[in-house]
Length: 239
Image 1 (cartoon, rainbow, N blue to C red):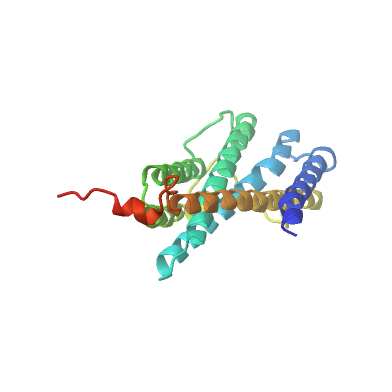
Image 2: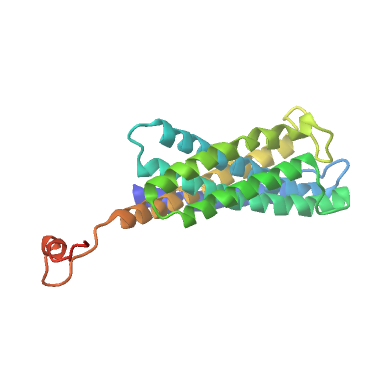
C-alpha cells in the first residue's frame, strides 16, 4: 500500500495535471481581453494556491509543535517539509506571474501590493529554512523556526486580500460565476493534479526530514572491540 501511494500518487497527479494543462491550451476558449496569453492561468493560479496551502500547513504544524507539551519530531518535520515545498511552488508561481504580467501590464515586475507582499512572504520562508540550517540543536531549531513560521503566516491573508484592500494592477480573484465554465473546468482539473503532486512532494520531503531527525539523535557507534560503557569510562575527566 505504501509503495502504491509512493509511486501511484505522483504518477496520477502528473497525469491529471497534464490533462488540465492540455485542456487549458487546446480546449478552453481564449480570454475576451487578453486572448491566448490568459492560458498561463492554468499553470500560475494552481501554483499559487498550492504554495499558500503548503505554507498554511507549515503554520498549523508550527502552532501544534509549540502548543503540545509532548511536541514530536513529526510536527517539526511536517513544518519543514511544508515550508520547503511551499517556497518552491511560490517561487514558480511568481515566475509564471511575471511571464503573464509582461504582455499584460508591460513589465515583468511592479511594486504592486500583491507582488510585494508575496515577495516578502517568499523571503520570510527562505529565512525560515536558512535558520534551520544554522541551528544545530534539534529542540532549539524546532522552537525558533516554529516562531518564525507563525510570524511569517501573518503575511498569508495579506497576500490573498491585497487585491481587495488596495488599488492594484493585479485583478481581483475571479469566481465560477464570472468565468467561462470551460475555463473553470480546466482550472479545477489543473488544481487537482497539482494538489496530488504537492501531497506526493510533501510526503517524500517528510520522509527525508524524519530520517535526518533520527540520524541527529542516533548514538555514536562504539569503537571496535570497546563497549559504549567502556568508552565513557575510559574518557579522561576534566579538572
